[in-house]
Image (cartoon, rainbow, N blue to C red; front, side, top):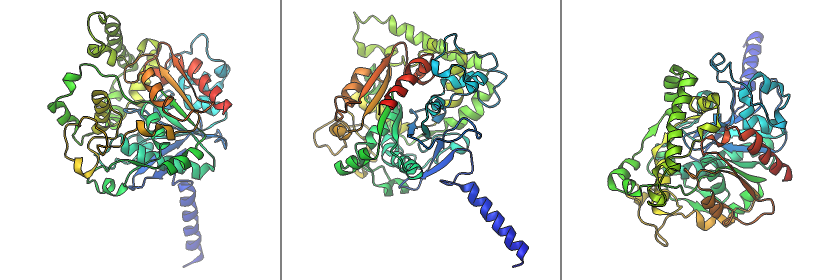
Length: 452
């Protein structure tokens, strides 16, 4: 081969290697983790801009809530919305950490960006989308449409954590919002799953766990950080859910690509004032009806509005409400939702009732019974030994503080740095971007991390 051709090949090869970089990335901050069933999970290593530096410091890995993607931790003026967001202003009294910050002054939406806050405090922030979740270059592969919460916890979560440890060589703090907290504390229980039937698409196998693996994982993790971590949800009108028709629907292998539908089809057609006012109308009505419910006359189990009271829009401004709807709403596997329904209806906290080859065609979840073959999360919470921090919303829609304190803090092995707070006036969805997030939640997280 002529010399000039050899040089050309060498240049192309070198350029390709530079593009692939660490973890096969060719996009700013993009890393890819491969699960045991060969699904690509997309991770973003955060820095505010390409001119900023990554932090070679304590890694923090955050997983999003169900029906959300990593954009919930990345508040900023969305691309193409500069004109519509031009009137956004910072509150009169902003948090001390944000005062005089040129990035926030240039884009006030960044004031509500948890990743940016952590970065300013010197932490190395990593964000991961589960399989089937994410937008653009950060969209993870879909994998098996039988996917449920157990798959996210047993296959996706370990792949992400192992990737970050491999790249950084440091013990990360792990956690996230809602389901993001759930998958992290299940990881610390040492949960595993046979990847072979998942990869083939045959069925989802039973969850397993190992005390030895749990000890190893806890030794490799610096701490657990969870924002309104999920567990047994509060439900109402259970008789409307607990019937054959509803369970038949909830047992289907349906996947809803909301990342595409919302991000590419619906939201580009809607101005921010319309989306935020619609959300406010719906959830302010729900909140009012919940407050007006005659609990002196009817049992709490009939208070449907309390169960739906998970978005306190009056604690958000027009732009942060729009941002959640425009950028953060994400794709959904129906069987992930159905797993929460089983927990709320049957008062149990276990793997999906369709797990196991013998259960793959089961429609109705069975009543919990001793030694019934299902993995019970509560039985293994004590294997979690790392220090834990949780921030709870004070509305009980989707996550009830007392329930989760019992599951997490009464269940885990005590650590002197365990802590939790409840933020007044907050809801499950708005907790990461409401007006209290930068002033109360962010500094509370920062103080806890400093104490580690």
